[in-house]
Structures are given as C-alpha cells and as structure tokens.
Picture 1 (cartoon, rainbow, N blue to C red):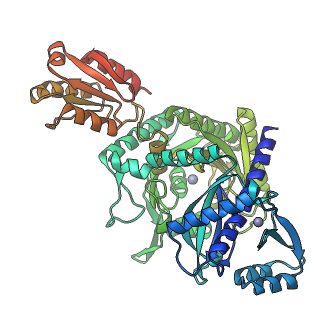
Picture 2: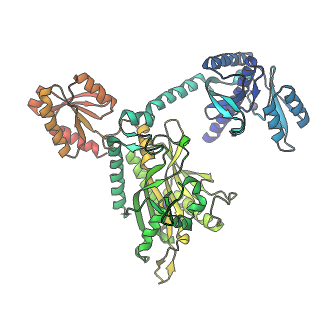
Picture 3: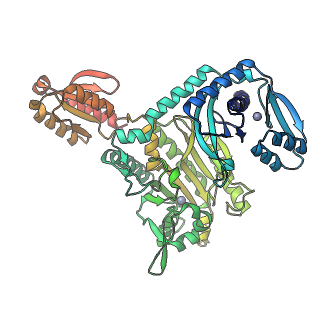
Length: 584
Ligand SMILES: [Zn+2]
Ligand SMILES: [Zn+2]
C-alpha cells in the first residue's frame, strides 16, 4: 500500500513537471517569438526545455521568463488534447517554423498516434500526460541555463537548456534548496581542501588525487581495521602487481568485455602489458601457485589492491570518480557446497562494517543479467539461473530485504550490490558480492575432491568497504567532515594559552601519543580565541586548553566539538575518556 501511494505521488509530480515544461516553452515564445523549440521532458527534481534562441540568455532573462510563467499559471489554462495525421502534423509545425519538432514527427514510428496539447495560444507536440490546467503545476523556480546539443550530437546545433525545479508544495521546494545548501557545505571536494585531506596536482594529472597526511591517516585507519577484520575471518592478505601482460586479461575476458574502461596497452621488449582494471586474475594466479584439496577450501585471498579505470576527464570528480583507486578486494575459492555460506558471511561482513562506519542509508540490490543483451554478458543461461537463484536464497536465509536490478550484473555473473544513498538521495554502488563460475573455467582452476577426482572451485568476488577513494569521499560528506573519534585524523588538539605553557603542552601531548592517541599542539603565537575558532573549523573532536592552573594541577580544560566547555579533567582521565571513544 505504501509503495502504491508513493507511485501515485510520483506520477502526479511527473505530470506537474511535464506540464511546467509546456508553460516554460509558452513563456519563452511570448518573449522570443522566433524561438525554435526542441524537447522538454520532466526530470528528477524538475524539468527542462531546450530552445534555439536568437541570443544567449542572461540571469535577468530567467527572471523575466519565470514572471511570464507565473502569468500563464494564474490564467489557469486548460490543456486540450488533439490528434493529427503525420501530414497534418508536419504541415502545422512547418507553418510555425518549428524544424526540430518536424524532425521529431518524422522520427515517430509508423502507426504511432501523433498528439498535441494546447493551452491558450500555445500548442506543443506531446504524448502527455499532464495535469488538467496550467494553474496546477505546483511550486517551481527556474534554476539554471546550460548548453545542450540537439539530440546530444556535437555535430548538430548547440541549444540553450533552461532547467526548472518543481515540487508539489512551496515547503517541499524550500526543503529541496535547503538540502542543496547543506550538501554544498558537505561537498567532499570543498571539505577535502578545507581539512587538508587530499589534493590534486595538474602535473600529476586528472583523476589521480594525492592523499595528504590527514586524509592518509583516515585511509590508514580504515585499511588497518578492515585488514584485521579479514585476518580474523580467515582471509589471507597478499600483494600483487598493478600491471600484467595482456594475455592475463585476454584469458579472463576483460579485454573482450571491459576494454573501454581500460588504459591503453604498453609495449615493452616485444611484450604487451596493461594497467590492471581489476585484481581478480592476479588472485587467481595466487590460487594457482599451489595445488589444492577440498580440505584447503575455502581459500580466501585479500588485498588492498590498486587498480585503474579509464574515465573521461569530464566525468572525474574529487575522490569519488578517479582513474586510480585502491580496493578492499578479496576472492574466495570454494566448493559448490560452500557458496551459500560464504556469500552469507560476506553479506554479514558488509553489515558489520557499515554499522562500524555509522552508515545506515543503504539497501541491497540483487543485480541480474539482461537476457536480451548477449553482447554484454557471458552466454550461458544455466549458469545465470543457478547463480541468481543462489543469491536469492542468501537473502531469504539472512532475512535481508532487497530489490532486483536487471542489466546490473557483472559480465561473468550476478552480484549483490550494496546501494548507499548520499545526502541528496542519490544512490551509488559501494560494496559488492559476486558469484562467479566463469573465471574458474577460463583459468582451468581445480581442486582434488573427497572422491580423489578433480573439481572446479567457485569463485566469489567481494569488496566490503569498496575503494578507499569512494568510501572516504562518502564518509567526508556523511559526517560533514566531523569524523567520529576513532576515524578523526587529529583526535584532540592541545592549546597552550601563553608561551610559558608550551612545555607543559608538549608534555601532555607526549602522554597522549604514548597511549596511542592522535594529538597535536597548536604552539603558534596566536590568541586562544583564534586557535579555538580554527580548531572548530578543522572539526577536531576535542580541544584541550592548558594554562597556569591546568599546569599546576596536571589537568587539561576540555572543549568538546559541538558541545563546548566540559571543564577541567586530569590528563589521565582525559586519556581514558579518549581511548574509550576511540574504540568506536
Ligand atoms: Zn507534454
Ligand atoms: Zn574480482
């Protein structure tokens, strides 16, 4: 029932946004009577319309267009539906000099109904649906102007796209903009710079971020922690090279299915090498070093493994879209009988990791292949059916809710994807668990079974905290840079009030460091107020002020992030408190 009413609300919003695009087009024609109209669909959060205009739009134009739109809304014009034959439609649009629309009509398949909607003096080619009249389009605001090629084709004319944001109510519209403002403050690129976590260098290149000491500290904490979790769970950690001969990827199938995402091949001494796009084939080679008996299985091989992905420079962004990344990767080689249990423990490991990281806004997706897309997936229907069934069983046995995504599988097998939602409600795949019977075949993997015969192991690919880059970018935004004590690069900063307190401050710092805590001393010759303001801006969990009285009593005066002054504590008590919080 709940999902039904959500669908209805979505459907209504879709109609409002669709109608708003018509209102926008009418308003633009009122101001620019010769405007060429292209397309104007509803989109997430609003709508847009592409126009061919005699000149470039300015922000003032947007205000005027919006004013005209309000006039059309106030007139509450009904939307009237009419059909035309192909010939009538062409003739009608040609008379209006709407060449883009004529092209759209020409592209409609034979036999398709050609429909128009009219509101007042304005008529647009459209399939609908809409709300009944222009007075019912909800609360909107024109947002921005962008360039867009006609039909996305760089050889066709560049049009001007006007974006609008639209929600049912004024309150929802305001909430959207508030969320956007908050998201800007949380932007990991902004905070990454402000907090000194990572940087980019133009001479190193795009999509190749540099981890600065504080960002590296966060990453090291995550890496040490997940490595310990894995060692405790029977994984064996290895190091393998970041490149290999192309033959390795020919055999794995990556060259055939994944070449567009790989960097070009390098030729050295008559051999071809490639930066690895994935680590699986390397771990397969690790498995193949020894011969295996059923008694050894499952073999779980893990690595904090760097891999490379070619992404267009325009798509790169901070730490979240990069060309070199380090994955918390592992491959489990097991018997057929062990698959379900192994996948279950991977899912449990993800759940435990997310609990530790404080991530709650995620859902499980069962990513299936698309049987109609033979190009993209290994062609073996039986294999797919079996593996997809196993993953469904895992969800049922763990009693974990999930949804299905057709066409989201890896080329060699279905996956469990953990979809993490960001502050603006957008979802991204972060962690995955995949069952694979393809690569073990490609590489002829085997073990000796209880029956003394050779058998093929199943391979499970899994990443728990995903790439360090993506997870840290997510965590920065999730915590708005105010990391919990266990993750904070600096857990406490010690602020001497005057020069004469420096020695005591250093003394205190040494005791914290000895207890394994991450502290710094702000020994600059600055006013205390300024040091506190900067400590706040750096989002450090604790500020420990030391003055005459503190030094005499062996105390620190404690200020906690977001809570303020907590009074004086002995150094030992503060170390105990911070140590307890650092357990996470
Ligand atoms: Zn429409
Ligand atoms: Zn893999």
